[in-house]
Length: 224
Ligand code: TIU
Image 1 (cartoon, rainbow, N blue to C red):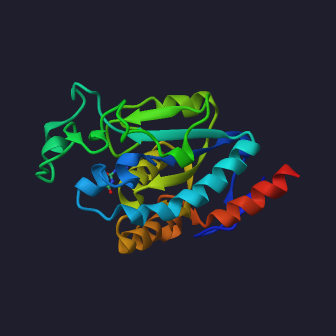
Image 2 (cartoon, rainbow, N blue to C red):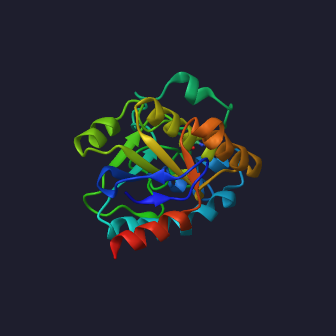
């Protein structure tokens, strides 16, 4: 079984039962004018995750492993948008409103889609999720179960919001999660650091953490 050097101890996985999940690498979070910037964030903070995810994505595709993409967003009629989420932050331009990248966080809009660098290939499932977690109100668990997936390699944004929520949901559903420390990013450097610590602390209370290089070394060897 391939074994990756990780915190708090080695992560063992079978590529046939492991999926890469790329969480919410959308223009709305990474590009100026999107939801992330409208919330008051410096969106340039998230760009560090792009290159590591690109490299991992290529290696995982070459290993014929399952790749899952997620996008946070809502139906154009806002029927899946809780009042509490719409109201949060008292934004003058918030979810559903017309913004520089189209209607903010709305499915089908330019800002809602995945950044050019990480566009899905045909056949790779894209999970449209209304919440922060990737399991809530989606068919992700069903798709993973039907493919016999037991472990997740987790990347995307933001570390302490959608990545954490998804890892916590996955952990309670019995998945083993390896979070790639350079493949996730936060608008807040201190949240990035402590968010990663919180996953691997207490013997791996939510999962494992490792830099993408540790995964790449193992994938390259297991392909030879
Ligand atoms: N605001 C923030 O940090 N994140 C989100 O709203 N969504 C995700 O993390 N995808």
